[in-house]
Each structure stands twice: as structure tokens, then as C-alpha cells.
Image (cartoon, rainbow, N blue to C red; front, top):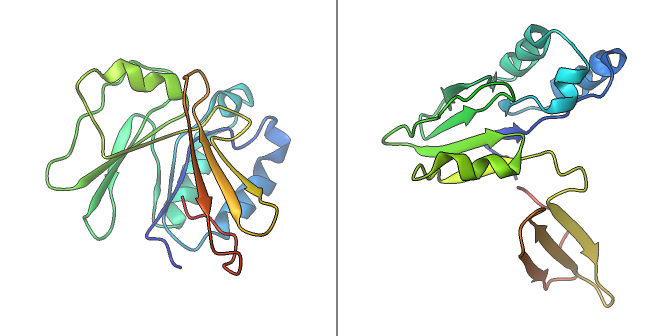
Length: 165
């Protein structure tokens, strides 16, 4: 499978000394990468211009309260920084994807409904894959701070256990 693009929702590093190594990993991604910073990225006090250059080199963008349209024009990806009250708007005629670090921020946007919203910050993951006895995989989508969990089961034990999210 070849994705059209990849998204990153923050906390690339915790300490500035790890930025070069983290950016080297990102440079190996062979699809446009769109992303936003997380609170740990701010705390590391790194130059976001260096990160933005790495994302741009993939064909994507580091989105600080900004939006970018994918090369095929089918999606508009909007990214929120952690430091403003920026209110995103939907782009007509495209699929709208919102990237934010904090999941709880989705409540702030009232009637604005994106086609897909992705958030980070949970540090335990929002998607967990667990092998099942007898083969296959259970996939759990968890929503920290909310009262529901969605569970689905992959049934083909011979299929490779991959998730493209």
C-alpha cells in the first residue's frame, strides 16, 4: 500500500539534543508529511523552521495555524499550533483534515465539522493492536477522557498485521 500522505500530531522530541536524529527518521518518509507541534516540542525550545524544512522536503508542510492542500487537490489539511485561539475553516470542494495536538480541542469548534480529525498527546496511543489467541489481531480505538472505546477484530490470521491510519 502506498498512502497519499502521512500526518503527525506532535511531540516529536522531548529534548533539543534529539532533534537531528528525529528529523533524519522523518526524512526517510517517502510521502508528503503534514504535521503540527505538541507541547513537548515547545518545551524543547527548538527552531521550528528546521522542522518545517524537513516536512516541506517530503512535499508536505509543518502547519502552525495554517492549511495546505495536497498536490492532487483532493484534501485540505489544517494544522493547529498549541499557542493560539486560531479558528480553522473548512475548504469547500475538498476533504478537510484537521491536525491538532490536544484531542480535547475538538470541542472548541462548535459547528465546524472536519471530515477527519487527528490528535496526539495521549502518550499511550489512541490505536492499540493486540494479537489474539488463535491468530488475527484485535484493534482498539481509545478516546482518553471520553467514555467510549470502539473495538474491531481482524479475522484473517494469515494477513500481515499492518494498520494504515
